[in-house]
Length: 548
Image (cartoon, rainbow, N blue to C red; front, side):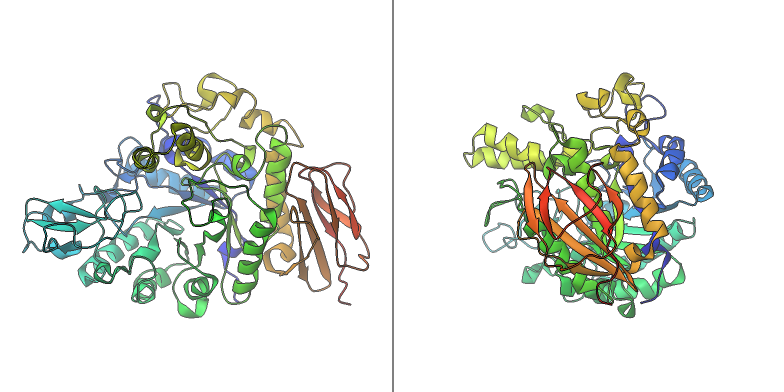
């Protein structure tokens, strides 16, 4: 496969509302991001994925866009945005915009026009249906935010489709005028010099609601190929699609360069591994590390040579990874380092979510009134109506709720952790006195130092970026291992992803030279064919190429 710049890059997601406030209003902003660019450059990242800063009523924190070509005043102005693009460019960092084109805000001019009358020129920009014969919703399609995906509009007596909040009506991608308007807007942004797009719920644009097809509709890939031909192919940019319903086979279709669709996708198969079978993600069960490794291994092998993997633990929709699959108390630093080493040694493009590099944790709540996120509020209300105990509802939200990742970035031990001089829109986690950037940068063995080292290793070693992947059985479901191989090089990765001492046995007769590449345990320097690992031990060694 041809190598592209984004295959050698490390991405960092900035959730602007919570990253850095520059004017004391408690809301992070674009000038705040500019202030922190040197931090990101020092960490070593090449690309900022910027969550939406467009004009928005903020029903869904910016994922309900009312003007694609304007900046929400709480974040700044278009001049600020242009300054960010240029300031990042000076530091050799590209800006990737979050593109939300499955739906808009109900305050977008297109929808304000569309709802005026059935014959309005913008009517078919959205999906409208008559009521069922009994006057109820057209069919039983459900919103991802709970309840019906249809909302009644009394002005014209029809329902419109919304797979998220009712204030987020779905665009009708079957209408070529919609696609043309989107392509013009994308081109406008690319001409400003951005490095590409992260495409929000892009697998929904091929929806066919009358057939109850939500994800992976029959025209989805045709739309993406048209988008590529009309816009993306004209620029040297990266595209990553959010695709909750993707299988490895579908992943190949998206990211195979011969198909001219996207650079890569976010796939979420592993995200459901800690929920009870047949239940919702709010019904919890412990993660089995071997199952996690099986999913990553499957995607590593399926996309090898025909597509490209994205590698991530967290984002603005997911809880903090050290609280979820590590141990955010006794082994917080060590487990965060183990998770980082596991992910960053895989083949693909790594994504770091803000605060992940210092081991920020979830923010537990004790009541409904502390919930900001629209999805978590609706989950609470629905499960309360279904008879769940309040304690169980809160346990689920504390484990999986989206607010966990959205509490402000923890920069130092000063007031509000250096995020703002005012009152933050969400409270700062009280553990900021122990967990913050300033402390992490002073400790050469910190989580931050591990991330910095992993980024340097990736940039300097083609085996990480290009090498083959091979799963290595360990005989223990809590100990996971794999090899990366390129030419005469062979590296072995082994991780104990549990808080207990665990034994392992590897099906390898002889390692040859055994040189440590990186570890989170100073006493762990070499690997044997069998042995015992301490809690959350992680080690990468060069073992030579046993194929010779």
